[in-house]
Length: 417
Ligand SMILES: Cc1ncc(C[n+]2csc(CCOP(=O)(O)OP(=O)(O)O)c2C)c(N)n1
Ligand SMILES: [Mg+2]
Image 1 (cartoon, rainbow, N blue to C red):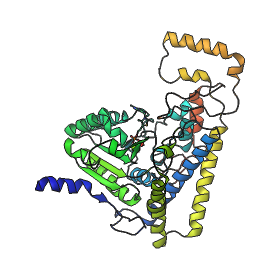
Image 2 (tube, rainbow, N blue to C red):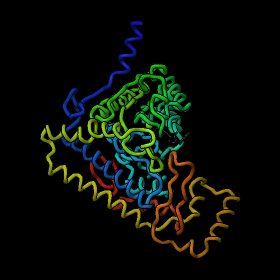
Image 3 (cartoon, rainbow, N blue to C red):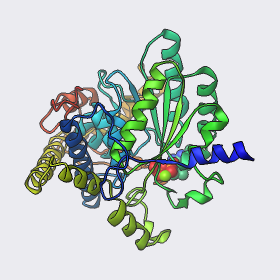
Image 4 (cartoon, protein in one colour):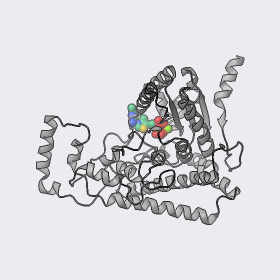
């Protein structure tokens, strides 16, 4: 029993650098400069601003289904900043901050949720895989890519994001087992936001923690306070370094909470109390925690905080304006992206559709967001409507560092970190 007890203690421990009031309880990673600390906060503010704007756009009918990230900013920003530019990110559908920090232009994220195929076209220089809506399917993809890199002697790391609900899928267990056996250079990053749509964690697993599942697969599992950006950075960096050094995978459980609905198609008041949400917002908010820490260190004051918020609003507004100014997508775009060479029968259908659309369909027009296929939204949403133009050309416009493109880590436009 003694050793079993030891195992339990290890995997239940919650790694923290900041307490909920922003006081240091551990030490920030030694490579974090003052500028970098402020940059973490700047990105958390940008992530929340982006998120609030997307919710509003959806409510106004200017965006399809949207999956909000509010509450999970520290888990995303801390882990994304631990990556090297050559590392690869395999996201689920909620990691907007991660993918933007790793170089995906903000316009691309908006386009995806507006139901535009251009949102699935990742610029070749950006090491981010496409959004995965089917739960956990990105896990074997990431493990396979990581294993391939190891075979080639490529010293880069891979990180795959998923939720607590995804740990019930076979893909999670198969991915972990394979990565453990073959020492794939991959970090399994679970954002445990405590719900899979309406299903609470205790209905998802009988394990006390998600981190402890790693033990069964023969690699370390770490449980971190997912609302503590410094702790998340620290554990993710260690895990990525381990992967690069050939020591194999790590499972990180970032304990966090989603404030909003699962997606805009969900009503969370039907399965959880407002008190619980308020408790997390008031007591454990990731932005408040980092703000207090920075202010106590003299790295941020009220005026700078206001400026930073205003800059975030302007950057998001510019990105929204850029994508809404794009011509409408053609319904025929549904034929454009699956096959390199369209099979004859689909070519025939495409011609038929174009003939049906006639002049009106080919004329283009102003942009309107279509319904993006949303996770949990019950099947594909509406396709983007009307208009013409090959999406490849439009995609190039969106990726070309238009005003408001997400900054890279070093602050350049266009996400070229
Ligand atoms: C294979 C599969 N099954 C079911 C769904 C429907 N679905 C969409 S999101 C979701 C819950 C996922 O929860 P979790 O993994 O905790 O991620 P979170 O949404 O909380 O970030 C489910 C069941 C799906 N998209 N794919
Ligand atoms: Mg979840």
